[in-house]
Image (cartoon, rainbow, N blue to C red; front, side):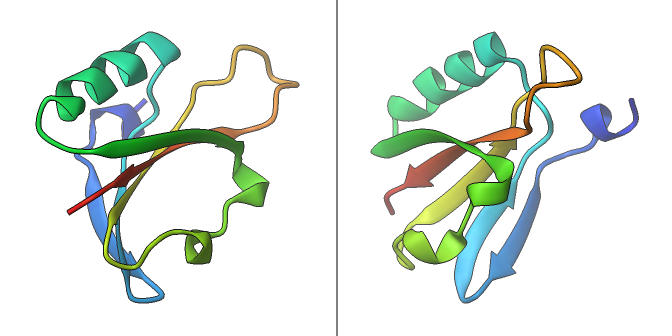
Length: 86
């Protein structure tokens, strides 16, 4: 449970800035996205974790990776990816 109490982490992958966030449930993720949309243009996608490729995103934008809580242990890991235009 320690990971859920940590702050977001800013990283640079293949010359792209990314924010790695803590696990969030669907409700908290949507609430967070709505608050960001007041200030930024955001493209939101949800993908399976093993299909994530950062090279598919624009180098000029900031990518935020938010792991989603699994509802069952059989469910695959998913990320909500936010592409924030700067």
